[in-house]
Image (cartoon, rainbow, N blue to C red; front, side):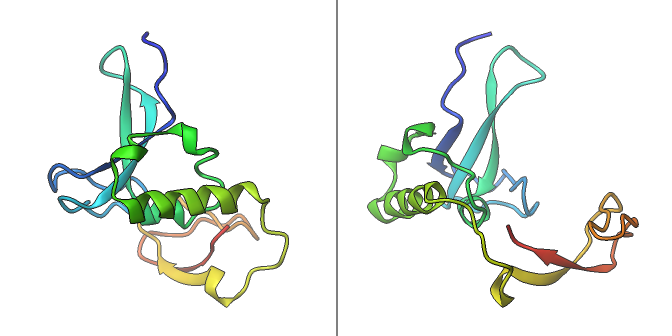
Length: 134
């Protein structure tokens, strides 16, 4: 297998055919997307698992270093600064306070695979569940 590339790839979507692996919604053409590089199963190499930039940047400690992002220098200045700010905040440490109102919410379960972290009961598809952003 070839040398592993940088763990992340940043670019603007070339078409509207890719979908976010986090929220499952399509990524519009010319929108910033971040891809986590993973070993491909169909060929000998690596391929990106695309996500909306916002879906990745709202999670703490996803990107460990600026050097981990391929194609960062090809992005618009505002987008570069946004990613840099995310990395700097992520390296300052993890959250030590309890969840505030903007870190909690509710959503409809999209699959039946989820389980409650408190009581370990299965959450059925289509049921409303509480969520906590980490």
